[in-house]
Length: 282
Image 1 (cartoon, rainbow, N blue to C red):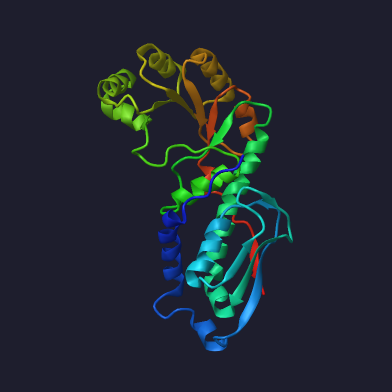
Image 2: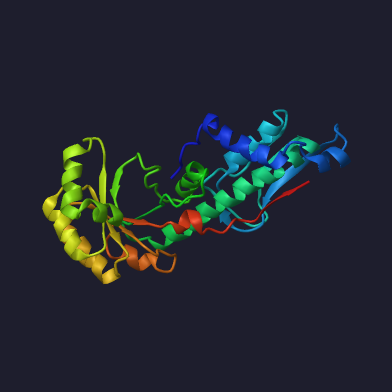
């Protein structure tokens, strides 16, 4: 599945902030000191391991923001697989400009490819089931938009982007509001008809109460054993969308998917991924 690129207008503030952080008040003083200003060069952004690519759009934007005259050619699109030694991008032009943008471009591309690769590995484990892998709000502060885009590039799906997207009633809400019936009654009385409602439960008796009271669209089955998840799916019997969460790993996700849940959410996709090794070579 292909996903449309995000508008550069949205990405520019993020990339500009990263460039300003890296260049500081004095710019790239190493390059300014040792590289003549009129030197031109060609560079290649290469994969040093197999991966699912994400962040190419942002890497290209980093080079162009530093120097619009740079010629940038991307050979592997976000969401595609790459192999060790493969050239992902060619950059030609002013050598100082390439060097000044290099680290920001690699930081974004390596990290976002890490998210995409981790997602793809988890998606692979659910093949043969109807379960969909989705992310959470456990993202790097300031990078949520692009990390969630990387999840899409890896074949996953997105959960809500912010607290304002949907009503997600967690255990602490239930405790503070006086129980399952109380929170669902409040939701039915006050929530917009356009707003999806999800409620978290960690016991089957709570699930039974949710089904009795009504008012939810999705039930989050939190930290349940696989046997309990199977029972929960049978209890729901298609009346609600089911989502499993809690300590989801690449090793455990196949068994969770086999319980019949609709979605499996994993915070690890955006908080415990490993950065993919990419390099820029002149």
